[in-house]
Image (cartoon, rainbow, N blue to C red):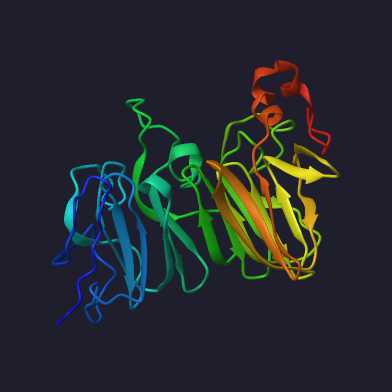
Amino acid sequence: MMRRLLVVSALGLTLPGGGCERSGPGPGPGPEPDFERPDQVAEDLFVIGAQCVRSGGWVACRGDNERGILGTGTVGPPRVEFVVIDLPRDAIDVAIAGRHTYACAIRAAGELWCWGLNLGGVLGERVPLWDTHDTQRSVARPGPVEGLPPVRAVTLTVATVCALGTEGTVHCWGLNVDGQVADPRVDPRVEIPRPQRVHLPAPATALVLDSSQGCALLTSREVHCWGGSVLVGARFVPAYAPVRVAEEVDRIEARVLGGHGHMCATTAEGQRCWPTWHDSVRRLFAEPHLARIRRDDGGG
């Protein structure tokens, strides 16, 4: 008997498998995918819940469509059946952001396509930040994020994205309140929809992101972090640019400890974790004089 995939929400709603439809013209001719036995599952179970699956290069989503996760360009009630996302049939990875606000898929050539709510500019510059009715909803059909090199991994938060390029480069975009995209002192915009290069001393092999901070594990086995706070000496300070926080690291991950976000690095001596937020970072936008700091490139 075929085993069905389930999405179970905090409210107890269960979305059984069965049926599918297309959000647009469809990925083109080819064998029909088996979404009940997918190659990959990405899901977020907040409230009603949403799920995206990948099967043979096809991507389909189901569940809560209040924020446009089904990629149809509109919002609506939850959908029990899978809706095939209208993108080329060569996806190699799919991810859902927390609270199922949007989703992204990586194509075989490294192109990143995203769809859903454009909070903070996560869908890139191809979509306006807000729609014409100022409802703070900008729901779009799938489309590529421009300004990126070929990518091999992506990490999503509700309003920020970071992508790891095939050559080890790191680019971030979206909400920048804590400097997780760029130094908030020199670029006071809250939303940055164009991918920004994170300048690291060596290529990255792994990437993690939470709502305040991004961290990369480099080929040198060092971890460098930006945004939020890092531990320097015996105190935590804002990380306005990438800062080396650990050496001889085997793995990095984002965790929630004591109700707050932390980054953790695993070494031969054990695991080291630190909080990713800092009050002084959150006060930056309450101090107008900081907006007058000029760029280092000689701009006005």
